[in-house]
Length: 256
Length: 297
Image 1 (cartoon, rainbow over the protein chains, first blue to last red):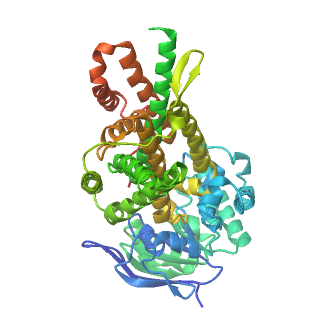
Image 2 (cartoon, rainbow over the protein chains, first blue to last red; image 1 turned 135 degrees about the vertical axis):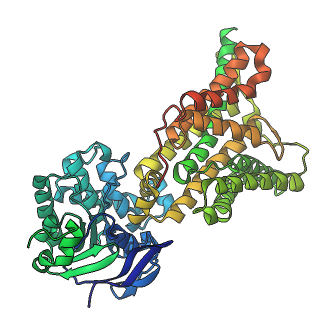
Image 3 (cartoon, chains in turn green, blue; image 1 turned 45 degrees about the vertical axis):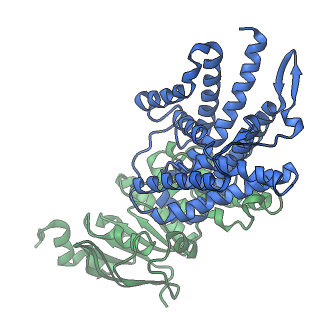
């Protein structure tokens, strides 16, 4: 059975059809790329999956459960976490605190226990800090735990976004252009990092990218969106030869 | 001015500043998360004072118990206001929620006038708090010390909650970026309810201590202090808790000292606070500690 099943999802904003009849099944452990030119509707797909938007029609089924239009925090708690194209860290909080945000709700102690630092809270808090530190350790950000998130260099902020999403302990990780603004060298490192994280955390990954080259080496399957519509779907080799894809990217077919 | 007079003025100023701080925090916390000026916050002072008044004089409860109940009740009223008057408007333009806030404020004030009548009631001040102590020849009422002491404790507790607890982390995340916080599993509604509960409880403590310091209560007693605390929050940098505290203290001290040093202009005491507001908005709109907050997208 597929882990995440998107069925005939359509999202309209007034007259604009941002996503048109989008269907995709993610199987456990897969790494699938979602590519397309700017404005193709890739981020809208993410927003519909994560509950930011309620799709106009269609269904999102996760682990056999219909999550269409559910509250974003509940969807995250069920096990779908994401990053953002334009980095959206909690800049005025420390690196460690950023990673603690998705962990906080797992604590069972009440507000009063937390405020008085008694009963279950101290132990739970220590546990939460330990988990958050371990996670920072695994992405190589532990030395910067007490820095403000906004003070990190760009590449590390990208990593921290991924770490923060991981601390939600997701089964499905949605990455929205994680390589945006990176040079080829950094992009290469990041792709290695994603590959490693996916293995270590047993994740299923859906990766948005608009540079086709980036995802070719890492994804098992690729879906191509253009103007909201799925124009191709298949293995990287197949996609890279698809005339419709080439046209969408280049406007005209240059290579005979 | 003699030194002793100066010291007693200073004690007075610090205690007034403490009261402003306590109430300003409620404005700033709500603004930080919802970008809403909660005009009804001022009237919570009145709600708390009357609740304590009725607890002691009508239900014959011990003073401490009725204060505690008044705080809990006021926190509940604050949460209820958010749930009924602001939450349904969360996706509406911000001005809509603000108008709703003004409406709630009028509702509370007029409800107070109907229930408690407009005639001021004298607040029962326990003997110990009303008494004075001599310190190095300066007579200061005990309530002055109690106000400063209680405020200091509550502020430390609040800073601890905001910076060290799971709830505080969720609150700060929410204040920073509403949508991202939701996507990181923060339950917006419950964090907002808690924010209102905390802010309202602090306002309740402020209102009761206000009533102990100026033991005449009436249904409109919250208006002027509420406005000044809002000014304090703006002055300190709205959205910033530490800023609200600093703003509250500075405003309190400035007000008392103005009257102490320039008795001839003491009639302009309230106007002075508004001058500070206007000057802040003109010359430093983000306030003392405020960071530039862009429109949320």
